[in-house]
Structure formats: C-alpha cells, structure tokens
Length: 524
Image 1 (cartoon, rainbow, N blue to C red):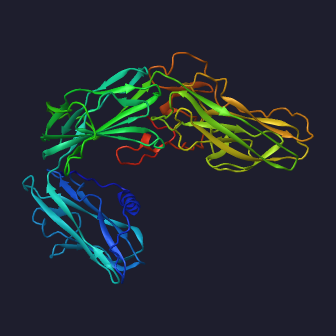
Image 2: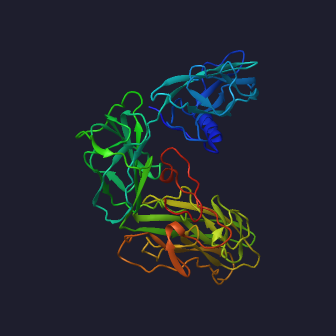
Image 3: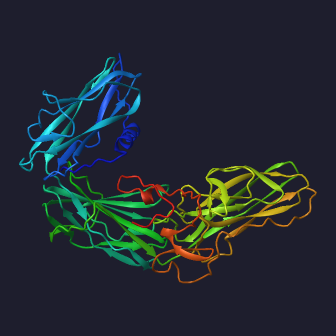
C-alpha cells in the first residue's frame, strides 16, 4: 500500500543517521574499491489526488558507504522515464528524464542524500503505477542501485481518539473501543492494528490473529505490544470498528499509564500469530471520521500512589581528605513512576555538608539554582547544592538510582551533615507520594578529632504535601510547589534557567518518532 509523504525540515539528517545505525556491513565489498548503497526512506510512494499545492510527495534517499575507504566522485541520478508522462517534479528534469545530483566524495559510513518532490498530473487515473530507479557511479568504487514504486492515490489510515481517563483503580478493567478509517483515495487490501501498553496495563484478552511481544525489563515505558492482522479491505472514505472493545487490566503497579493504537496497511504476508483465543474482527462502521489521527495515545491516570525515597550516606575522614558519599533515589511502590505528560521528572536534591567542598560531581547532577528552581546543567565543583536527574527517569517498583559525590574536608572542619531530598527536576513535591517521612535523608561526614557542627541549611524546594489516603486522585495529577500547586503539564517556576529532565524512551517514543520535551510542555 502507498502512503503520503511530506517534507520535514530535518528529514534528511534523521534519515541518514538511521541508515548509519541500521545498515549492516555487507559482504559484497569490492576488493578494489568501496561499495556505496542508495537507501530510500520509503520505497512505495503514494501521490495525493488532487495534489497538495506546494507540498509534493518526497522521494527521499540517503547513502551508506561500506568501504573500504572514501568513495570518490560519487554521482547519484534518478531515472524518471517510467513515470514522467503522469508525474511532475519540483526540480527541472532534462530531456532524457534523468535527474542528476552534484558529484561529491562519500566517506565510510552513513551520509546525507537528497530529495526530489513528485506530484501526479491532473487527470491521471487513480492506481496508475510506475517506478523510479536511482543509480550512481564512483571514480574508485561501486554504487548499488535501487527502485521506488510510485502510485497515483494514497491509502491514509486513521484511528479514533480515545478520551483520557483518571481514577481507575488497580484490579479493575477498562474498555477501549477502536475504530479504523481510510481517508485516502485507494483501498487498503488488509490492515494491521498496532497497540501498545505501559507498565501498569495488560491486555485482558489475547486473540488468535494478534502477535504479542513482551518488552525486556530494561525497556522502560512499554511492556507489551499487540500487532493484530485483518484481511478486511478498508475502502477509501469508510471506517471499520473492532467487533469488541480492547480490554485493559489495571495492574497493581499502575499509576501514570497510556494505551496507544495505530493502523497500518498490510504489506507482504501476514506474520505468524502467537496469540490464542477468539478471532478479533473488523466490522463496517459507516463513513470515515474526519477527526481521526494516525496514532492515538490515551492517558490513563490510576488511583494509586508511589513512595519515592531518598537515601543518605555517611563518610569518615580527616581535614584535607577526599571522602565519597553515595546518595540515592528509589521507589518503594506500589505504583511504578513514569510521567507521560510532563518533563518535571523525579530528582534528588543534594545539600553539601558545611565544612566540605564537592569536588567530584556524578553524571546527571548539576548545580541547583534556587532562584530559577532548576539545575544549571553544569557539574561545577564547589556549589552548595546539586540536583540529580536520573536516567532513565522512570522508576519500576524497587528501583534505586545511586549518585556518588567526592567531598573534600576543609581545614578546621567538624563533623557535619547535609541532606538528600526526593523532589522533582524543578523542585516540586510529588503529590502521588503520600509517605513523606522518607523524603529526606542525612548526608554526614564524620571528621576525625572534630566536634559536631551545625547541620547545613538545606533549601526546601517545595512545600511538603500532606499525607493522604486517596491515592492518585482522579483528575489531573498535580505537584505542589512553594506558594501553590499546578498541573504536571505546567510545572516548574518562572526562572530563566530551565533544564529539562531526561525522560525514558519508550514512554515518549512511539510510533517511530523522536520527541524533544520542553519545560512547560502540555499534554497533547
């Protein structure tokens, strides 16, 4: 099936990087020179009808040089002769219908390519198909050609949007009705439905036409994917619903969860099923909705809690000694912690004991700026406080993240204490945590021959939330800050030095794309 492809500002750089990681070294390296492969971002292109002015479908390619050495004077060309009668391009094409890009050298590994935009000429029948061949030459090596299929018309599949939920209790089951629509101009000869869950959700029922894949324990965020295959022809302009809702069990670990689903045209043979149970089917549901989306993510905030715990440390030494203390941040459950709608992630605020100087700063820790309520991003020695942002930022039940500091004991120092405090990247209190007696822990340096000094004053980045018994209260999850409270989607302060905490990959990588979080990002 064909899809519509749009121009994106960073598409070439992202694609070239993906090629460099994905493409294995081939055994076809020429003994007398490098071998260069042309790799297409999509080798099956659909041209919208009618064309979108100023937005042609992009034939997007990159290169990978297997070596050995740099390929000299590489020239890449696109032969459009098979489609030129019914296709227009966004670049002038010579009379021989072969478009050629400038010659250049290509070092070993992945390299940027280029693009050329294609549009269907008015009046071309839907389903008209042809090919574009990309080939090349090199002064000292070989360029391996490739071909792209081009079709007039598109298959554009969408899914319905599910309303966010809050207040579901662990042990309950929720239902997710799923609908697939085709807003393109060509039918889909079979479709696949890809569904993903986070840690606190599991599928209540498995189906025989679905393949289920468990994620490894180190793959935070996503725990199970279901890929369901249907041989139903999804006609353009029509929608089809599952014959029953998808059941999702809310597990004991549930806290901040999401369920995502997307539809894909069936390409090639259907995968062998690992599922058991009844067959999940698609049934006609009328005209395709105009408010669908290529991929939907339903946020589900469970009525539960998680206890984030600060771990302290004690070290001994004499004045002038460099001692080491390992502080920590952990989760004692019952819920796992993975904010999926904010970048104000769990963090540890470390106050350095008076009479010592922080000289060795662990990775992921930076100087805390009280006036900005954020870290500077710089691990500068000698600061009174540091904020440590764990990576990954998600915490399974039982997880503990250590941070080791090297402290130099100053001359004439006495036994002294600082503090480790469980907080967030912007100094807020996690209101899903109802156990606050373990939010802080002492960081003590016992000085040989010294007396006991006054403990270091520690900034309180946020007012402590009062303990409660209601769990993760239904509605928008909040964190409390000094002077008020706010939604997780709009946390932090108005300070001028925001540093986004690192978020786990799988909670925010879905659907094959990358997401750059910003400090005050709202839930999509």
